[in-house]
Length: 66
Image (cartoon, rainbow, N blue to C red; front, side):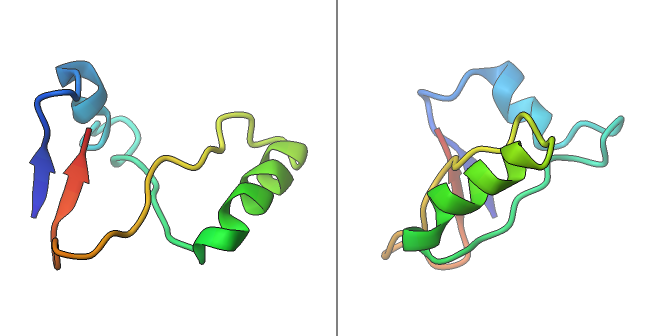
């Protein structure tokens, strides 16, 4: 289930489901390694690589977008 919080602009939420790109690409890594991975990806030419969220308790099976 994907839930859009009120603070998330519509245009940003729509990027998750853009048919031109088959939707956004998200994957998870341990929190203490995320920033380092994003830096390595940018160094490899993936300019838009970024940490955009975190796994939190109390929302099993739900992606909150804000």
